[in-house]
Image (cartoon, rainbow, N blue to C red; front, side, top):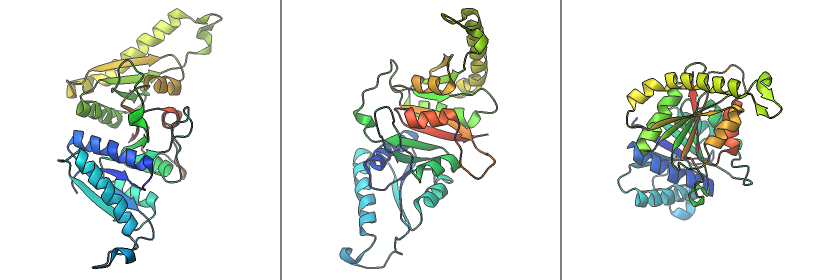
Length: 289
């Protein structure tokens, strides 16, 4: 199958926002966009039937209207549609296994709670074999507040392999022709805390150590993507808080999750959870070893 960006459609404003974002992404990456709508009661396609008797009519209309809008915005973008008679979670997980990325809409609640993950989104994010991006409605109406709007931000743990994570982040920045900020947060140990704040000698030593590790991790990717302007961000704070703060005003926040985790329940780490629930930009969750 040709490389695709798949977006899940259910007719909600959030899914339509995700479709617009996915179309931009597919166009930037020169990939095909697949519009997927899944519903267990979809009927087998009849050979000829009037619209008033076609129980798939509204599903077809939903996908057709989205396709018409997106192709008007991106005339050269290849767009394919897919109606699947299955549970949405199952259909999206299967689609994710054969997509470059899967894009889902997320519902904003309050201004400080950017995402609500329902019964479908969380299992897909936690179990998909490839990257999943969460996009919320209204993003285009929000003015960036960062000094470097439009950049890609990637959260790095600096433990274990992060090749898949960095490859996705660098590729995303290169496709958009925007800078990349690699962020690592590290909490200051208790012995470094003093009544007036943090011991500056210990803080300086920690910062130098982290910057050295970041430089080593980023060097192969700087060489692979020489046109990407790369900076590092070091926060002497909880990793989750440092990442969310660094991503303010970004075009995309990229976080990782373990590709293989023991146990029956899907699980996301604290940084991914914080990014999903408090990040104000699209969030890509990338499985990696």
